[in-house]
Image (tube, rainbow, N blue to C red; front, side, top):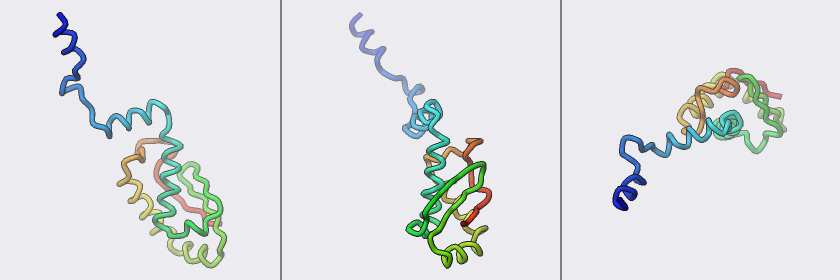
Amino acid sequence: MAEYKKRSYFIRRKEALSMEEVIGQFIKSAKLSSGLNTQRIFTAWDACSGAGPFTLKRYFRSGTLYITLSSSVIRNQLYFQKEALIEKMNAWLSEDILFTKDNLTSGFVRELVLR
């Protein structure tokens, strides 16, 4: 009988989940995906634009990323690269493991507004 109890504590191989699946399930069950996606979008902006030190404010809503920059020269340079920046950020986000792609409220960047 004691031997049977010991075996019941083992997880069967077919019930085991990878860490990626467990983390994804935790993020969805705790409803953290929207806030985490927004932070990942801000990180993508810093990584793809190179304007992180000049960024004063960031705001993301309904697919639009609003960026306030401290330098008008950098804002004008980035203005002409808006489409390329959006594509680069979305490519960066699609490779990110923590980014939830099926989130309706905070998905990929569709528009970029520079202020």
